[in-house]
Image (cartoon, rainbow, N blue to C red; front, side, top):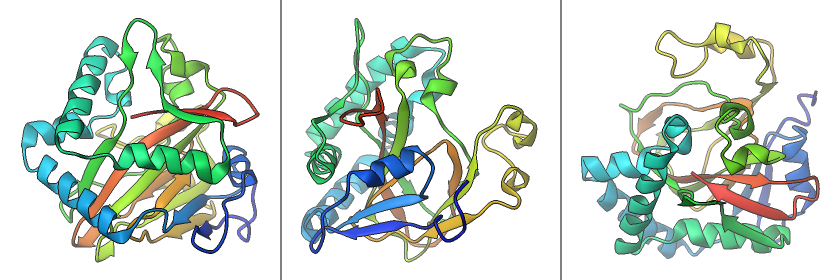
Length: 262
């Protein structure tokens, strides 16, 4: 278990320093809360991509298509892959490519051999990204995610991975609120007893006594954390938090070849 001193973000300004590969291992081992890469992309490009996201999400059907992750479809993976293809087409039509540039930036920053969208034999590619615009009306809940655990019994290829990280690219940060909280408490058997009445997340009692890291995102941040550790986004008080989100998986301890999905 990390100490309070260790459980803090590692922030790397890519204009001044290089990301260290060991930062990934610290995340997979649960030794650090958050790794942030700053200034990977020009500010005008990030602003352009944020505007494209907002335009995409104006339409309710498109917003639903682009906002639903794989974990919502573990009982109906056929329809998931159909939706993933539709989402990819919508992103292409909109000229949106921040998710692709983020994958390449992660590969280059950490010196990985490849970072590619995962493919299911006989089904096709997984989704590339979930797009979200959180407002003061958006719900916020405590969660823990792990596709190897949640997908157990589905036989999807991702359940055979060794490690999972979560990547959040901040296209536009909120004026107030919208902070990432990561607690040094990973999921354990029996945690379902702490689930909220609506089943959307877990009660705060599950992280009672745990160290907590709080990170306020900035425009253009690429944020990595281990989603098996309990986490949540605090409610947005003012403005919008516009993000591009996907999971990053590794098949073994080398952490050399990564696949992504959403």
